[in-house]
Image 1 (cartoon, rainbow, N blue to C red):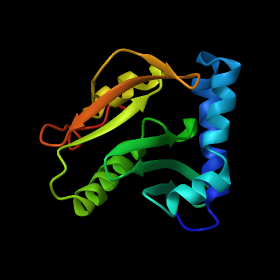
Image 2 (cartoon, rainbow, N blue to C red; image 1 turned 90 degrees about the horizontal axis):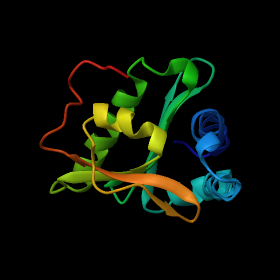
Image 3 (cartoon, rainbow, N blue to C red; image 1 turned 90 degrees about the vertical axis):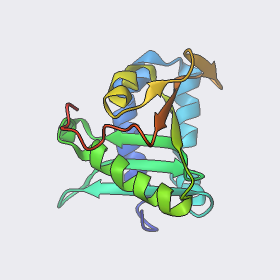
Length: 158
């Protein structure tokens, strides 16, 4: 992500969140998530220990992934119009390449998946690492990807 794109990232994340995730969250959870994706906060994180990759069409951002500390997926969204086209898989592959360059010894990547996204992460090779939990009103399922046993190069079923 380049400086100045944080509002577009916010708009994509909010649009996809509201369509697919927010209906499963409490009002407090929705509010907490919106605070987490505020454009100023996204920019601040991208200037510290986070990096953000985006996939674009000629007109708009089609997908994005944010990684913290070269090992934890903090945000990962693909616009509903572009889902099932392999965009998420490619974003994750590129993000993992950056993670490996940042830490050649890295063996796993984690994510706290929205409950409705668990199946998607499983298709990308992640496995559940614990039961669903609720932290700061945000529902999630901890998941882990073993980088030595990943199926990212297999055909996409997204």
